[in-house]
Amino acid sequence: MASASGSSPDSGNKLDSTARSVIRENYEYLMTELRVNELLDQLYQDHVLEFDDRQRVEHETTDQSKVRRLLDILHYKGVLDVIKFISAVRGTQKHVYDKLVETKIEGTPLRFSVTMKGI
Image 1 (cartoon, rainbow, N blue to C red):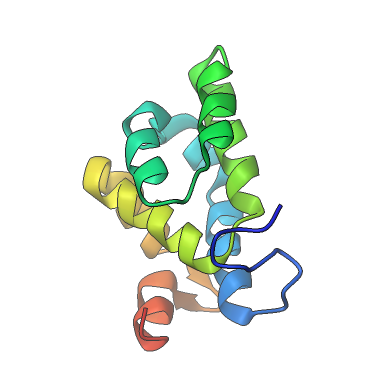
Image 2 (image 1 turned 30 degrees about the horizontal axis):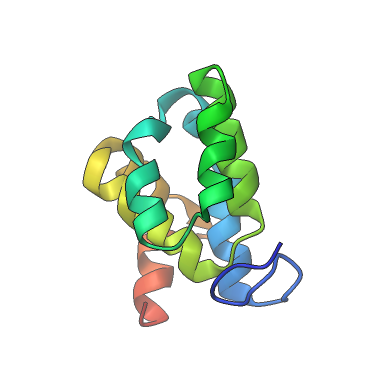
């Protein structure tokens, strides 16, 4: 599954790897804290999710299974889609956003890594 930005998990792009690592490093936290229903409209509008992606998330019966489905979908997205996801989280769940951007990957918080890359 390729993203709208044309990246895949195997692209070898360092920033792609960093963005996905932030989700992986915070997986358990996201499973308990992320409120997916608040994000779906924004993620669809921002072209992070396709219509069928959105339906698959909405079809899940529990909040935790919705989070898991969304994170599974994001795993196959490119760095721009993951950054759009983090931005959408910022608009609805600031405490989750703060945790994500302060996550250190290779000793550097994502906030600094993304800023330095000009994104």
